Picture (tube, helix red, strand yellow):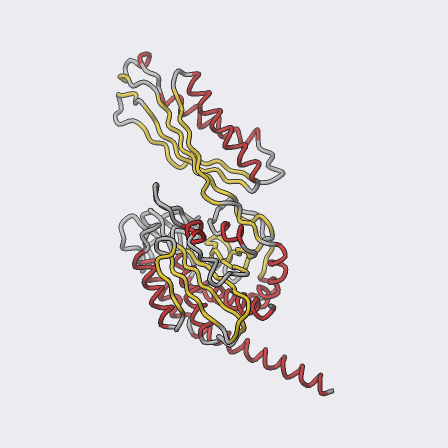
Length: 415
């Protein structure tokens, strides 16, 4: 009977502790929203997150968290130690905005011309700042929490290093060595107050390709004197799309090729000398990705040559497949359900989005999950990520703080 009474007291104590943390999370909602509005109003692009990172660093320092600045260019790393030695868990948020002009009418719309948080990173940062505040007031755990605020997730500018790979190279997962890592991505088109997860391949790999089509310039009135790179380009674009529709086994895994930029010419009556294409490859299978890369080169060069021109192709890999560790996901699934409610934790399909968070998962166990950001009571439809109309509902942020807080505490407690 004494043992049963003791266990009962422990369960009551744990329940009260959990309720206390939930109350603390609820109490900082206005702060989290305010941070998000500020980040959104003053966005900074990849490797230029100077004011953003300083705001984060000052907040962590105000909580008594040990801070290291300028990791991987502008990254901020905070270390919160518990009451005694134990495992180390990392929580990650990305910081960079995109070169997009905002057009959604928000009261806190971007004031930086041509720059916008159009992917939810403003929410990610605010959620992790809130998580840090709650954990700093409840650091009677065994182990250590490492907060990773990373820049350049969208990719560093040409000729520069940055992002997850650079932070890893500079030791972000060391001193102390990290045992597990958790991250989230808000999803503007998924209903809020829900968490979406998937073991194994969740987000696709991404590769950036450029094709320079070289022809011979001529007067628009005498096209027979030219090798027209615009005509060649049209054939290349159409043919490359057949790699997906006719050569890729899409029942195995999804794959996508998209052209994001076609640039060439400067006047209505001049056939230009060259046209430049830029696009992306996405795949959940490395073999499929490598085959697509090979075929893009073969088709581009073959088509250009057949018309008397030339194609120069360059392909750079930007992110690996985001592979969620199945054992870690299974272990921490009860934590997700405790935070959001079992009915609100939803097994998802794979996405052809990409995240350089994948590189952390190549090194240590962990996972990325999605947090719904759309209020279904909205009168307007939720726009896609990376668009001028992008928005998320402020009320979706609080669940993110709760999930990240519980993941950290539950992982350390389980160890």
